[in-house]
Length: 168
Image (tube, rainbow, N blue to C red):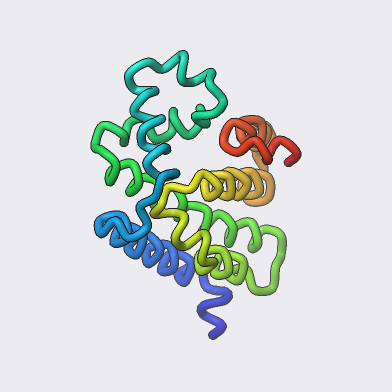
């Protein structure tokens, strides 16, 4: 049990398992919904006419720019990229917990990865999951890498991912 809660290898195992389950859900359309389709469509709109789309808040311009290269591959490619992006918060949360001196640094990553909304949201394209990734990245940059300027830039972009994150 201590391996799961403390060892760095367990985090990478959890991340890989999250990606594999997510890709399975994407390929079988198990979690396909309207928000994932909108993520793809808005990114493909940005590919066709970037500037007007980038300044239209409703389409979440940061996510349009992030998923723009993958939108050429279709809905499944965009959602597969979303799974990979979503999985990155798992090791970032564990690294932040480790840097902050948590006794069980993998526990926050396990709770995050096994949370039902996060588990299914990564493969369904929910922008809430991208918000969690953004906040995780800010915490990681502040605690593990101590890059406050880059953390500030990421935090400044978060309202363009989810407008509720403006208070963060």
